[in-house]
Image 1 (tube, rainbow, N blue to C red):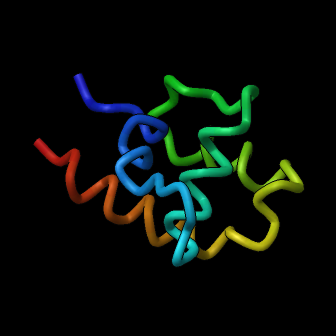
Image 2 (tube, rainbow, N blue to C red):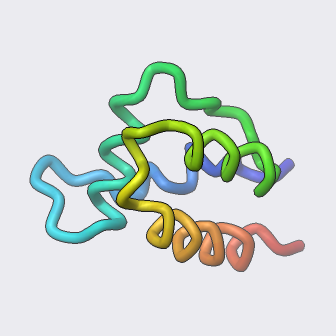
Length: 74
């Protein structure tokens, strides 16, 4: 079974984020409503796009999603 996007992005968490990947990971971690078990781009992307918390990080999400799909290929 593939790792969820939430679990994948947690590798970027840092107490003091130095870049947008780390900032995205920290915001996802702090977002209690973030869907932690999703693996579908459409589902995760829809959540990111409709939650104001991530409005400035949409392109970062796309970049991290690309890494996620590369790392989860069979």
